[in-house]
Image: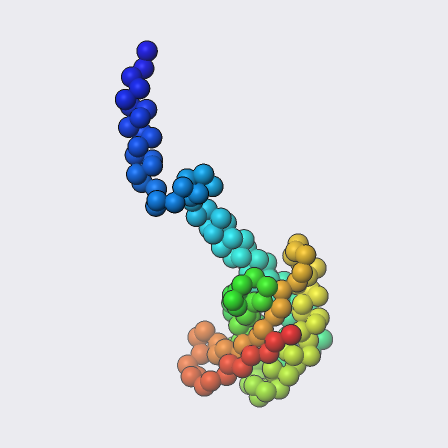
Amino acid sequence: MKDSSDRNRRRRHRCASADGDSSDLFFGGGSGRRRRDHKTAQLCRQVFWALSMALGDCADDVLRELSVQDVMPAPDAGRLLVKVSFSAASDVVAVADVMARLDQATGFLRREVAAAITRKRAPELMFVLVPEAGSESGDSASKEVGQ
């Protein structure tokens, strides 16, 4: 027959190591937040790839020269901040012109994202033009365009 003191010691250790909230013990702690963060990161990766492909297939020459640098939730997965920059070989075009073209193409880009992901609603897209990662120009070329 097993000694019940080992079992009781393990139970006390589990209860003592909890943060004091009994719901965390029952519902598994903060795993829901980690799962949400994982799903949001997964959505951002899917949107990154979908926008990279959609910009490459765009009819507009200026938009075809853009490359997606990063996609981040802003503030959550319902609205995503997309950082784009010019590819190294492209001619520099006025920031206002690029942002206006992105604003006109937002509907098309959002449809492409909706086709690439499985969600009830496609996220809103906000674009920010950032300097190329290897570029040394420190100009403030970031302007937001929302849907």
